[in-house]
Image 1 (cartoon, protein in one colour):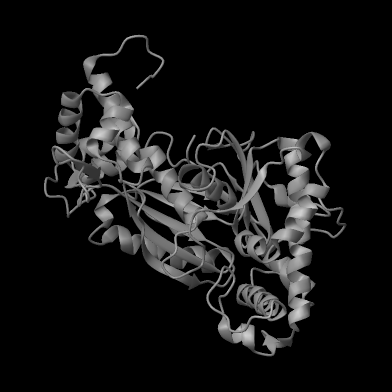
Image 2 (cartoon, helix red, strand yellow; image 1 turned 90 degrees about the horizontal axis):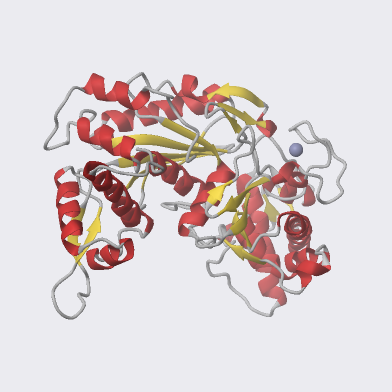
Length: 471
Ligand SMILES: [Zn+2]
């Protein structure tokens, strides 16, 4: 429906309020009471009751009593319906992938965690496609309204994917996934951009007007977010900050450019600084062991012993042993690798703050342990590169408030952003209409299934077809 229309029919107004209410329930994580949502949305109490009843009937909302009811009348908390819509979210990294199912409200359940692949397009995407098809054919699959997919490279046209350091060029993701003509829409997005979207919706950039998010994996990428929306650029590849010459490097990057910042920040850089081979989306475990070794060394230097779990404490044997991978690496060398990487990260952030003037810069992926282990070095390099105009009140640099990636059961920024991309498309009059006209037509689990599967599936994959994420 057209929000610019000067007059609305009562039906349009009701649809508008349905979307607003569902969006509010989703954005708050299904934690707010109906009375609070009613107040925040400026709805009459009776209107809210009618809306909630209708949304329950359509399997879009359910209500549960508040855990600690306020004084007076008992209050209800709207949340996802047990037979309601689901997002199927995928995080495809250079070496592994995760799969999770997520209802309205954003509380995802991991389906597959850390499944390794061989680094080729077919070797990664064909088994992933089989796993997605298995989910769509399963008990909950009929409720899936979209497949959101984060990938570690630039995405163009919502379809073509490059992953430079794996040598992927113009990979047609939908063709290799082969989800079939009746699958829900595929929303493919860049990992760093989706991590930024997630941070703006549920993390440390929530409510921030202008923010920069940096996602550090094998190398790094990012997003400029204005009022919670990532800037796309003319061809939807904006935010490739990792491929700017921000630290004065000269090496040739696999992306085609020279001197890229990403050559000095991320898992590959940690490996190189430690004198180890890097590239091809391999060596993540070793990079984490370098972080663990650096952390253990810091604790020793601080006069403490033992190693509890920490931001980078991922491998106790790596922290206490003599080698990192198969290569001897001293604690001092691990600390030096971490310090050099944190220095390069801080230097680049200073450049970005000078150029983009954000209120805050958030870090996800390896940015979180780098910030924890070498925050002083990072901050010093950041401040050293700032213009005076920023130095008086520098943009704050903070680790992601979302869960870590690559942990059992964790739902980090890229996966969360992929889920958000699905709900951004679904929580629209068009998305709800498709659910209403054919609820459960992809759904054997639907208690009120009606309509024809083919018709609904075609409706959902028709029109402009798959999109690349939130507009
Ligand atoms: Zn590059």
